[in-house]
Length: 480
Length: 93
Image (tube, rainbow over all chains, first blue to last red; front, side, top):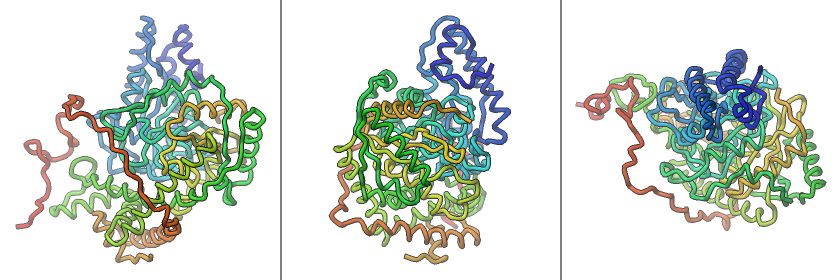
């Protein structure tokens, strides 16, 4: 039997009734990975032995009727920027191709504590920098709907693995859209919680004031469950929030009528007309269902992408200074220390990473700091203020997750600016630290498109509620 | 703002990166076009340019957690002597 079509609820009901075991399910997933992932390239490392061992441990608990964990027996994949003690964590980079962390990320430990079964580590753009998955030094992840297309990025492998049923749910990280954009391209749900909602401890840092762990799953309910598991204050991450974590899944069924704003600036001339039409259609359906939908405008979102590409390279240039070849990662030997640094970094860091380090070094340099970095910090604050004002009028802001459907592999490789613009709709929520989600809405030319929903800070409960309403209004959604 | 190839090499040197000639040429073109695009923030109105006070971080109590059972924080393939990394000399004779 193929267990890879079963939801978390169905899996756990099957375990309880004795219809099948965790080992049956894990074997089913591992076989599917073996067959399909050679072409898709969604995993960097698969953990068959560890996953089967964990499955056997859980099967013993079924026998003794001690099924306790919220993720009991759920096959999970983890993006390869999330540290897993003693297991290779590459961040998609040749620099860390043999790196085994000496401690684990808090979010990964929380998945294990709730008895999830981790199947392996998923592919991603190098150090999470990219919007297509093509910047991984382990090769691009293909889109499960059409293998000539990109899967989106940077959590390319996590989104593709969920869509191709090579795991049930996956953890990703979202710095400027890296969970929502690939989720949109691959036709699955992706949520980025509020900045600080989930711990960043053990996440290989890209841009520390933006990075947030997110969840990718086939349904909103499953995203809500995993978000509930990974969220909360962590003494090991001083930016994690002490806001209590609601029981998102139990609050899902409480229907509410919301005020929703379609963001005018996200529906511009660059957006595929069919995508625009689907957004208008869902807005009509939401209105018919009793929600109040209006058009809203926030002109400052035009500065979000410039702000993002000033502040994040600045943070990248500082965070990636640690890859000097001395303490961990690969290294090139030289008798001169400075030469050893430059040769190591030149040899093992990829093109996009180098480009952003140089850009970040420039915007932080004396003479340009005020004109670029300091000004961008202020513009970031202005954008946050703009969102706060807008959220006094509406409960959510909606629009397309991306202006286009998944583009062809190689299409934007020679034009980094065009690639950066692929994140134009997802970056504003990241700049402001807001929670946001992409829900698959429709197919355009045979490829999925997502609806992005942005909520006020820490309003994940309501975000999941409206997300599920959209799912219900859309109707059945089949993975490829 | 226009960057020259010499600027790119200087920035790369500051960032401790060696670049090939092809990379230097490409990055000069790419970064120039990115800087041209991000210069848009100069349009943000001056009255909006105030950085709010940053909320203080939640810092844990300064107690040993015994969380990390680490023999060595370094990769197994690093040269370590008496718990310290062996690196090329910083000062030349």
